[in-house]
Amino acid sequence: MKRSSSVIILTAMLLLTIASPLAAAATSVSLSANPTAQEATTDDEAEYDIIVTNDGDEDITVTLSTQQGNDCSGFSSALDQPTVSVNEGESETVLLTVSVNDQADGDCETTVNAQATGGIGSPASDDVTVTTTAGDGGGLYSVKMTTDEQLKTYDGDSIESDSVVWDVEVENNGEQQANVQLEMTSDSDCESDTLDATVDPQVLQLDPEDTETVEVTVDVPDGSSTEAGDHCFILKATVTNDPNAADQAEDNITLTLKIPERKECDPDLQFTSHNLDPGDSATNSFEVENIGNTEWTVTANAQAQDSDHDITGWV
Image (cartoon, rainbow, N blue to C red):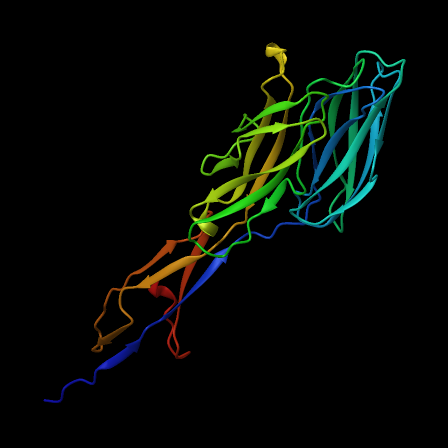
């Protein structure tokens, strides 16, 4: 009796594809201000950092303009850059200056309007409003914080522990020596559920017009595997020796870390080959582990290395 010839069936090639729907390019812009309220005198203008963020899918050109409220007699405003170009996912900072003369009194609301245009997307717009109070002279106690880049995009490619650092300048722009307490805080519009930030040093002593740099460090323990999206932090500075305990001089600055999406998987095939006699069958399994930092879809297909065999029904 002749033994039936055995057939060696080569492993089917399993093809993985990331299913991501095609999306039309969209133009989008958002504005924020730091600080949102400040006092101005005839000797000391109020300055605001207007952060222009491109949160759309294409590079944009943004035209900025200002508009003041009805109760703004004696107030005037100016932007140092009326037009800025912002790449996708990045931000630019524009300086808004509000000046007062001897006729200014009370509060004045200044609204900065943004009109953004891109390549093929529809135009987009946004606005932000700041409030300037006319004072009767330079403030005795005052503090101001600035940084070159409030929005940073994480560019690490390791899944090991990492960190991102901001250098923030703290200035005593008051008339008296200032003891400044620094702390990290958050609110409903700015927080991070998975990352923590620290500031060093936490206490400064600054003479009038003195400036010192502090470091804000955000630990990224999972590196590029950290949850994708924007992680927001607020650095708050308070002049603790301001005798007005109910309303001590303070300032805050918003820092945002953007973690890009990482779509990766780790596949595992139970058997790489089967040796079967004619009419026999076997079962194999294929597992895929999502080792990225966002949800995505995997599709598995079977394809024979020999085009004469149809194995599309194997999966």
